[in-house]
Image (cartoon, rainbow, N blue to C red; front, side, top):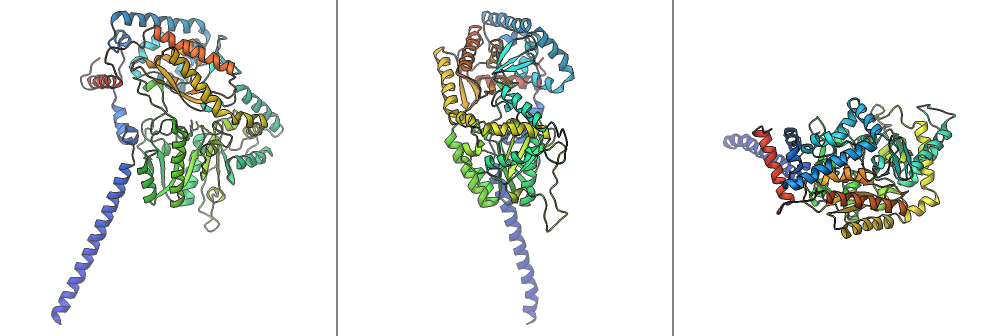
Length: 564
Ligand SMILES: Cc1ncc(COP(=O)(O)O)c(C=O)c1O
């Protein structure tokens, strides 16, 4: 009896310890399993490993090629280097003598406008910047727009494929009309804030129809719209984590722009996962703390890769391919898992909204997101961000807990002038001519991309176009160190590109076939001249891999041997 009384507490303690140990093992194992799942769902590239990406990019040494290396970075013989030098000087002189006023204004503005410094700095790979800028500069001022053309301060006209960061969908004249119409609509009220001009009601009704959602909130930029969408998703689900996909841009807010470019360490509340991958679906299925998934459908062109810019075009390794069916399938898989797990699916249509279809990316990819963000073109030429969602997600207070609200406002939200221009925009896109335009949109731009590709192939030029409707990227087939030079040849032929150069050409829908033909002629001519000027001369055996190895050796030498 006594013995059994002594054994009893001992057994209990042992049992408790075993249970605690088992629980601890289970907790550790499930955490490790979760961690492993997360690791498996990361893109193997640096873009998937943001802490590493930040560490590595912050240690890349800056250096510049002096003249001889600049002209023969690929080991070109002296006669090739000489041809290149002559061509470079002529290119610079041509750009300079045709645009003295534009360039003088740009030079004057540059030290005073920090954004201008950043964008002119990031047009070309850094090794080439210094010597290039001694000889070739581009103007950053325009005085007029008409049709598909921009005119600089010296009266030179350029075909505009800058796209105004994506805003310019219907052509600048369209937006001038929207703004004029909007101003006359709201003029008698003026900039009264905090309540609404009656056109807001019409805007909301139209947006509800287009988005298929119950409610709308207005903001001043796409970044703000995304901030709001994420905030309400967190509030309504009570969960904290945001899933974004590798390299997808959603504005410059810390939580959705972790990694290089952001001085803060990546937020622990943001999971950056691999797009179009089954391991990502497994993470979404198995975790309990995910509030929302953010999708930027432009990534369909280059999943898990950053927007292509010429500043990283060090070889010909840029890749892009748009497969509408595959991306539709991916979005449907995301939709299924988000529905099953109570995760808010946010389709960020700030860039692509209205560009692919009248009903936006939701219509184009046949997907019903929980929340949709719009921006850019929707403001009819004025700054805008919009969130559309169902009542349950958009509600920012709780009757049962009156102090528990989700605060998000903004002084300029629903500004009457913006609402007026938006009203003009929305009326226009619901008009019959716009409906007709949308019906043939894909067909038109697929045909046009093919036409340019055929001409490039006929001329045996080492480049081609990949297109997602009106958003194009130039792909190079020659493993050259100088592919980024094409942007300057294009400018000389009268084509205006944005600061990302040939990485992204954005067309407006007012291009007629004649405008497009003129674009093709100039484009092919620019590439032909670049070819004649020997920038696509390559040494035997040069490949993207050999270029990458050479660059790595260079970086190491500059980093560790302090080579000048
Ligand atoms: C998909 C997407 N979301 C959000 C933003 C941010 O918009 P904004 O520049 O108006 O802040 C952008 C801007 O390019 C975008 O492309």
